[in-house]
Length: 485
Ligand code: BG6
Image 1 (tube, rainbow, N blue to C red):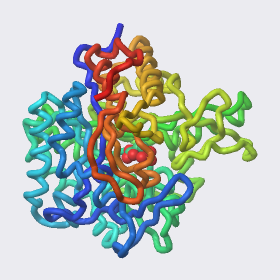
Image 2: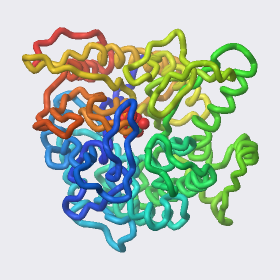
Image 3: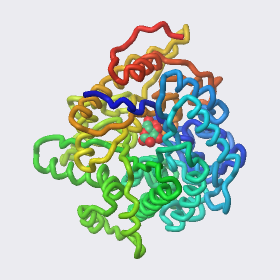
Image 4: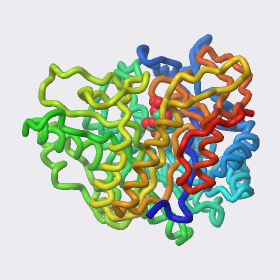
């Protein structure tokens, strides 16, 4: 048993992290456009206005907006079958509140989609990937307000209608469950509470985040329904940030704590989006955290009517849960957790755990029994360009190889895995730190954290390796010694 013949090999990106052209042809500012650069140790800042002389990494990013033809040609050269990208809501509705869509935004994505189709690359579109229109933050405090549901639906209607017949796969919200953590308040929901300046240390009002999540669940369910009405062949998925959790020890306190944390973080949102109802375990969590979700009469029915067609997730690392506060944290940017003595970490403290991917795929598939895609995975690393221009990223090849081997095991275990899109297939801006130095790509982009760089593209060693992986449908995984272009 191995990967299915029509397995979707590809790569993943997000508009705010690679398009640039943040205010071009009518585009409005998104929440990401209001974030300055940062690093592993210094938090990005969120500014309410654009400050002079300050570097905002999303504003130019890697300029995919003007270079999409060149970039998609490189993806095609690797043999991509699928390309995951997001639509910037603010290119279509600059403030999120206009009555009609911005034609030049619609046209841009139509061009991108057509360019993919030219190479038989299936577009996989994230409707909202960490880029809530900033005007909705100002007016409504983002998804904390119910009004945003209707605005999101206008946006969905515009894109579902325009790209009918060209697109098959949609994802309603990127890593929707990131909003179970304080960092997701602004990142995913555009909630900006008074006093917040640091991205990694937001003034947090959990009640608002969970209310925001309810609004996103309703919006997601409505979007699934609308998509199917507009084009019955559309497939709409959910997308979760899966932070696989292990008990740090066999102490029952660690076991129970792991189950509790993992339910809230990893399973809650998927349970709602796949099963169409709130899981009972959340009642206790809400009670103990003084959270009361305001619902309208029909909401539960809407959730039931809008279950997703497939399940997708990002997987980078696993963490350990310990009931002993003395246990050192891994120091990852978004997720903490106790250090696992059996695993190595990336330079950003993300614990590398390929077997955890097999375990996770099995756990999720057992729970839901619907087709699955891994829509993000990869190693954020410092790449060095050698004098001859080569980038020998053997560490990245090793990381991906080990993860693909475990995907294969999971397929043998019976998991219905339909696709794999490693993150940042071309170098782009990091979501957690705002850095360019944290690179994931098969393609190197000449762009640096001070904003310099000529934006030229270079094939890394992993580019040739991944091409071979796709050509062999995941059979040839060994490293290659290629003459680099
Ligand atoms: C996921 C996001 O959390 O991880 C991406 O969906 C993000 O937007 C990716 O870029 C990797 O994280 P980071 O912080 O290394 O960019």
